[in-house]
Image (spheres, rainbow, N blue to C red):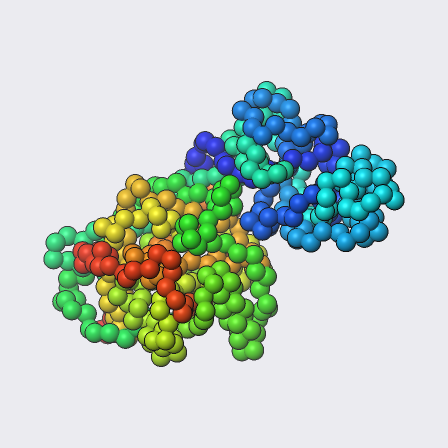
Amino acid sequence: MLPIRRGLATMLGLEVFESSSASLFGGEKKLSVRDFALPSEYANRNVVLLARPSNAPLPDALPAGAGGFSVLGVVQLSGGTAPYENRQAFESDVSRHQVPPGSEVYRKYAGESGGAWPGPLGDVYAWSIDSAEPKPEWHARFQGGATPAITRRHKSFFTVEMPSGADGLGAAKVASTITYPAKPPAGRHSGRLMEPSIWPRIAPIWPSSTHFPHPVDSLHEEDDTRLVDVEDGRTCAEPPTLDSHGFELCRSPCVATDLDDAAQLEAYLAQTARLVQRATRADLVVPFHHARDRFGKRGGAVERVHGDYTAASGPQMLQEPGVEAMSTMRRGAILNVWRNVSSEAVRSKPLALCHVGSVAPDDGGEGRAERRMGMNLSLHYSPAHRWSYFPRMTRDEALVFYTYDGRADEPRFTFHAAFDPLPDTAPDAPPRVAMIVRCAALFETSSDTGGSATQEWSGENAFEFLLRNFN
């Protein structure tokens, strides 16, 4: 078992009344009453509950050990975007928000019963409490002189610096092995021969092009396995986004229960296209390839760091039949949508993704792809690389990431790989089963950054050629 890194886990916190904990964790309280709409970026995230003993608000910032509150547990919230229209609507929800007329909280938000609406703080919102988990070990440890440092982010929300690896607290980072392709020696080319049996599965990923321009015996296949920190993307105060990191976790309940059924598969591909369109604001999204990823199967999950496209093959793929609408568009991108389609959360071999901003052009290079030859973008190890993953993904979540983004001055690629078992992976953890859909996202106009892709990603010593073995 690999060690958990110690340090600080930056988490999102919410101040609450200590008196509300019994109904919250007992399941009676289904709504949280607030005087502002729930920000969308805080929905469906693990939120640490910071309990204050009185009605007085917490200070905007407290250093570690300052006291004045305790840590109760974790909730996940959603909804809360529309206010109550009137007092009657608010009071009719009393069984769910547990704020009866005459109570201290009622007077705070709604004023006196029968008075003017809205109350003294203005509009009243109710956020759905999707889950609430008490953490008695946190409550025992993080109070008095052992409270974590907090800083107010937005109204009742705080940034909380929890010690990672603390009892009952999932680590913000885990130390795990990531397998890179080793840099080939002079005159050799990173790559390997692929078995004919799996070639039909992977060949459609790449565009048509020319044959491998070098002798087959020049291929060099060697792994470079490194121990790196992999961040838990769920615990970040600023969650990873497509713009900031090149990847984003989206809540998106799966519309299909049987992806072997043609009608359900068609509905799922349409759902995926809508998801990518919302995430990227593209004018047109075309799903052009999908595959079931069963870890342990031939041609399944890949444990070697790679990018699916290059600065050359990305634009070529956007010109392929079925995606040729690119000819009428100004810019295009290719994204993968990775979803766990098992009934169980992912507990083995999750997907690790490298932050796009941590990769320098000379860390890798581009190549060509064809029906007899494919090529991944190759990445060689650098200590500057930053990695993230999202533990225990469910069917209701989708991981969206760029495999080629040609809208900016420099093309961007999100390198990724399945990685070694995590500290909480049990020996009997079921194999992961995922659906991967590759989508072309097309844009009528260029992005604000404009420009054209440069040739910085062209170091041939970093190519990763994948050739079909015809022997």
